[in-house]
Length: 100
View (cartoon, rainbow, N blue to C red):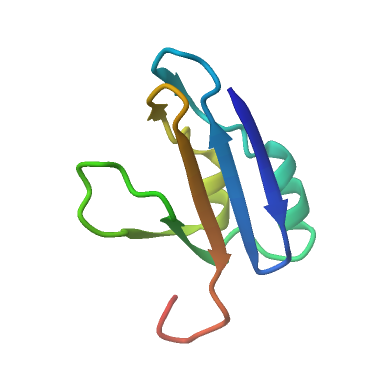
């Protein structure tokens, strides 16, 4: 399994690639990313996540909303088919009175 992230202040892409011939289950440890985000944002900052490569049984891209600390501490279990990939986008929501 190969995982890496492309970080920017307002949007981060988290990429995972299964480089084996077998299906693999995994989760990503967000501890280092959380350290970076928490230097700038509070734990109550709202973020939205989306997948650029939705699962085969998913008809459309879904977005999920979390508080920053909530997202970074939950184990998001994923499975990848052999030689499959996932790209998850984490976007910080701009301050908006209707978001919170």
